[in-house]
Image (cartoon, rainbow, N blue to C red; front, side, top):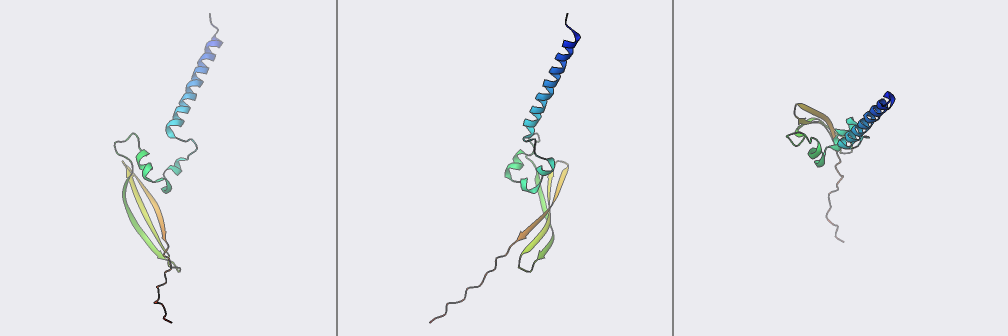
Length: 118
């Protein structure tokens, strides 16, 4: 006859193994465990590859770009123009609205003068 201590030890070890395998499986499906969820949806991650891999279990490919609304335009002293706008992405019933600032540097261009004849 087995001791209750051995049976309990065996059950605990099996439970720990299952929890360990589940942890490894969840880490492999989510990619990296070091990423934070707030950084996943930042604008620097919205590229062509993100749209393909954003929703593997959805009927649609991913986020749909729904538009850009220009809020303000500011011209600076050095000729640069700064645009403040809002980008809108939709996925299902969820809408993501991101503030977007784009700075356009206008290079200083000197009009060519006709050459002076000697």
